[in-house]
Length: 134
Image 1 (cartoon, rainbow, N blue to C red):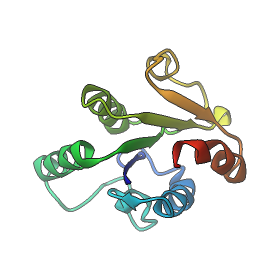
Image 2 (image 1 turned 180 degrees about the vertical axis):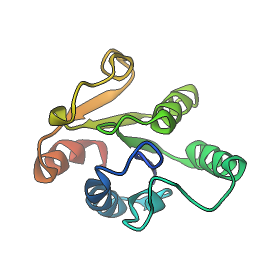
Image 3 (image 1 turned 90 degrees about the vertical axis):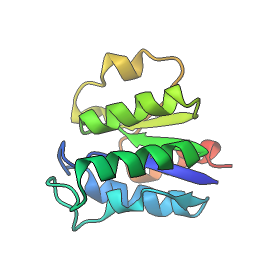
C-alpha cells in the first residue's frame, strides 16, 4: 500500500511530534510517500524546493497513493488543498483531528466522502486508525 500523509508545514508545526508517530505507524502498513512531513527538523518555512517543484511532486504522489491520511488539527491551506485533490482523484481519505485543538472545519466535518477520526491521544488514534490500514 502507498500512503500519502498530509500534515501542516507552512501553516505551523504544532503537531509535528504526532506526525512523527503517525508516519512511523503508517510505515508499518506500507510506503509513506510523504514521510518528510514528519521530519522534526522541518520548520514552518518549508523545504528548499521551489513552490512549483513541491506542487508537481506532491500531485504526482497523490496520484500514486492508495490512501490519503490527513492530520487536520493544525489548520493548513496546503492540507486542505491536498484533501480536495485527493477527493478529485477518487482516493479514500482519512482525516485525523484532536478536538482540543479547536473547531474542525465544516468543509471537513460536513463532507460525507471523508472519514474523520477524532482522538485525544496517539494510542487511541492508532486503535481507531487500524481498520483503515488492513
